[in-house]
Image 1 (tube, rainbow, N blue to C red):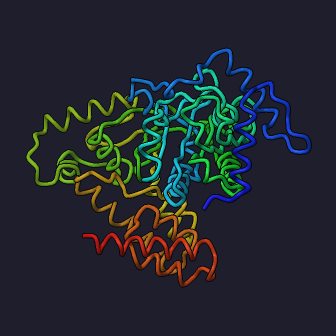
Image 2 (cartoon, rainbow, N blue to C red; image 1 turned 180 degrees about the horizontal axis):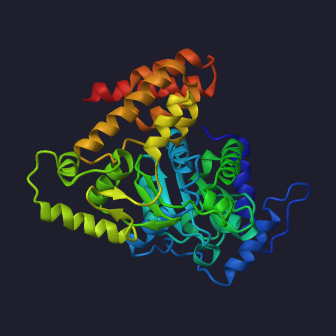
Length: 407
């Protein structure tokens, strides 16, 4: 049901589409910032256009996303936004500083609508591209913004409501923005509050190279939990799936002979010494020569997030370990060493969470492993009845059981 207040608000905003319209005494229907944005938009954007422009080069968008300091924030805003969008029938996005969408996640209700209007990775949502909208406005004014219904300049999003918060580095640089959007009848002050709160949390937990650009983590850093990422002396490097497997063996297992490397990476698959040596040669070049031989070993410092999680669990810091866990180790790898590491990390974390984890940490794990009934049941035990955590666990458990019945 749509409230009378919401319907009346839409009528007032619709009536004020004229940028020069006088505000209603006592309650202006359109914020001054939106009026100013409309004036800017009038000079550059046809309001009757049908969609936002979208980049053709998907690989370039993926690279920008991989480099995004927002994505690399320790709070994992993509996971939290995706969960919020799915639960609330919305679409979520993370942008760069120019208003280009780098990542999106849509609920079933919004997926087709978002695709149709270019609210997808590579879509341009700055003011010069689509006129007044929450992403463009938030980046322009440097503050959180809400754009409701026909406050949007372009007609194709005038049935939307969008909430957006810009993300800044400590030195004031704009890094991008986080956004939640949905149909106009989904408008709620809680959505704006959620976006603003998450934005502040992201800014407080930006990666070290953004919080302090003078500090560069030396050596090789491997993120193999969830979406893999490799950095050498603070700079991103592109590794193939096989190179990630070999780098994992060298960083975690330590000095390794060619024969052992064959067993750990290839298992029973037939592979020649020449093939392994060629892989090592390619990886050595990518790492600036930081691999010695006989036995193969790294000659630079190395850090692996899977090892960090296990170290935290050994120290009893279960909640922080759950916070850093982004998914199974190299999820699609079939290398014997990786399979073993994947099992050790997942099982150790899960059992530790069930024993001593908080409800929030358990829900974090459940967002990655949604069909683990024991984890959700433990949340229900721990969380106070009526709390958001208790309700979310019950909802996830019900959804999982419904899916099981469907099969």
